[in-house]
Structures are given as C-alpha cells and as structure tokens.
Picture 1 (spheres, rainbow, N blue to C red):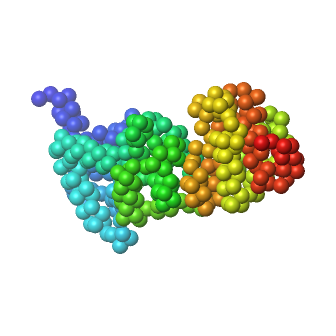
Picture 2: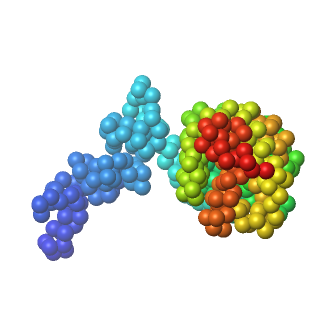
Picture 3: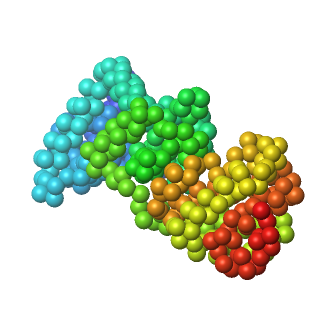
Length: 357
C-alpha cells in the first residue's frame, strides 16, 4: 500500500468539523456522524434543539440545558424538580412514540380521517348543515346581536332548513332567547318546528355540559341597543329627506305601553283605515306590501323595550325601500299619523294629522 492511501485512510478517521478551511484533527465517531466528541453537537442538535433523527439514546451525550430546552418547548412544560435523568427519560418516551407513529403512519392517517369524519357528522347533527357552508343561509346576520353569520363562533352557531328549503343561521344564544319568548322565525314570522326546538335544546345542553355560557352577555345587549338606535336615526333621516320635520327622540323615549299602541295604530291604519289597494301597498313596501307583519298578539306579548323597538324599526325600514320618493312620503305619512297618537311633540309639529281619516 502506498503512502498516499495510508494518508487517506487516516484522514477518514478524523473529525469532519471544518472552520475557515481548517479541519479538526481529533478522532471521529460513527455514533456522532463523523464528528469528534468536542464537535458532536453539530450532529446531535439541529437549529438549537436535540435532533431526534440522530438521537443516540445515551444520556452522557447530552447536556442538561439541551434536554430541558427540548422538553419544555417541544414536548410540554416539565416540573421544576426534574433532574437530568427525568428530562432524558421524557425524551426517550417521546421518541419511542414518534418512531411508532412513523412506522404505523397509514393507520394513524386512517384514524385521523375517521375522527375528522366523526366530528363533522357530530357538528352537522348539533348545528345543522349550514355549519359546513354558512353562505347557504338566507340571512347575513344574527337577528339579535347583528353579528355576521360568518363571524359567529363555531360553538355558538346553529342553523336549520325550513319548509321552503331555506336555511337560516343563528347564534344559539339568540335563538334560545327567542324560543323562551315563544316567537317564530324572526325573518319569516313562521312558527319554528318542534323538531328544531328539540335540536336547539340538545345543543344548549351540550354547551352547558361543557361549561360554555349560553346567555347573551351585557356588552352584546348594549351593542344591540346602539344598533337599534342607529336604525331609527337612519329611518328619521329618510323621513326628513322626503319632507317631514321629525326628531328621533319622539320614538326612542316611548315606553313599552306606547310602543305597543304605536304598533297597533300603524297596523290598523295600514290594513284598514287608509283603505289602501294592494298595488299601493306594494309600491310603498315592495315586493309584497306587508307592513306590521308580526301579529299584534305576538308584539304585545313582548316586554323587552329594545325588542319592541327593533321589530318596529325593521317594519319601518321596509318603507325606506319604496319604489320612489312619493310612495316613501306616503308611507311615512301613515307612520307620523300613528306616532302622533303616542308622542305629543310629534302631534304639535304635525297637527294636520287630526284632519286625516
């Protein structure tokens, strides 16, 4: 064997660590991937953490600092009383599980797929089909909180399909409150089927069992009051636009009793006293001409002021969609007549109402 081959064989035994073109002359070890004991961390660590792919299984190869760092960051926080052997044992167990999972990857993926399928089916049973795609809901926001259907937390989302095959989405807390007051669907005024009520109760019980609060928070109620007030501000702005002097405080300051009478008067004017044709009604409130669609007994049954205000505001907003300013003016004229029965400031400004009907 010539001298050149002898030199190459000797070089193979040297550490492969190199810095600034200078090689380490110390003996390498196979268990350290060709590094010496001094530079073994270049093989045993990766980006500052223990590299499980190169794990030697020998506690003497690892510093306490590295073991502790890996356990607390990569696995889970360890008790302060842990010693080096405890950290090492924890990593060995973790690596064993890691190897087992890799060797059974197909089974693991199948189990994960089954779990995902189970959770999807469970959520469909609890929250309705729209849970998978909220865009199929006919409504864009929750009727009570005004929160976008897309933004409702998954745990609070609920949906159902009515007899017309329309999907409706809700915050389950809002729907719970609606059912407690024995109201129907706020968008169609149709009764909510018993089967849907049972689904609501099942989801409520499920949330309660998991310590999830199912009562609307006060902050949400406060936000709702502000939103209802803004609706009336917009409505009264439209009234001024079509020529009526008005003040939003006329309606905001009404108590429950006066709100109920206002609704009653408006419904009576619209359906009877004004003697309106269906064509005129549809021009004022397109497309179906329905105003005060909530039955009077249902409206009178409510004793929450913000809800009375909201139902009334939603009816008046229909007039804002009149076919032209003339019809909008006519629609708001009937509202002012009704409002004058319960608001003296309104009557004083619009005393012409006493000569109508």
